[in-house]
Image (cartoon, rainbow, N blue to C red; front, side, top):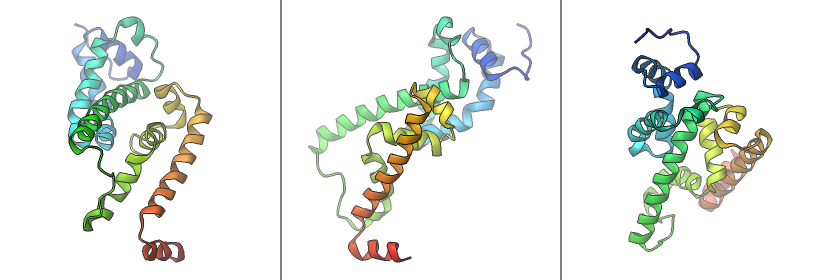
Length: 186
């Protein structure tokens, strides 16, 4: 097999990897594994390594005609991670709901504040939560998110603003009144 030029674009490497070129796969891995894992960990921390592996396996499972439609390798890999992570989270949520019989999302234990942001983020609708995660965890631009999600850039910018506003509202609602007053006066 011929040596792959390390100066090839991500799209070139993606296509060569899909054709079974191990060296191209290694270069693609070197370029993207860290950020893919970081993004995956932001969605499902305990499954980040599995999601990372699945993203690269998806390259090999995707027909060449579909790989050639990819216009941004990073955005496409993010989409792969996102889809697998959402499927995993849906499955987990269904199982948890069955086991816990839909008990309230927020506990009244002393460690309530430790997971408040995480809980508030998880309570956002998926379409809003994913915009925040793609933007702030995966570091995607709105243009890349548009490619990854198949949604217009302007819609994603609006969703981002709505998500931030809802997250702030949720956090304010769950702060004890004395803490909420202190935050507003600080």
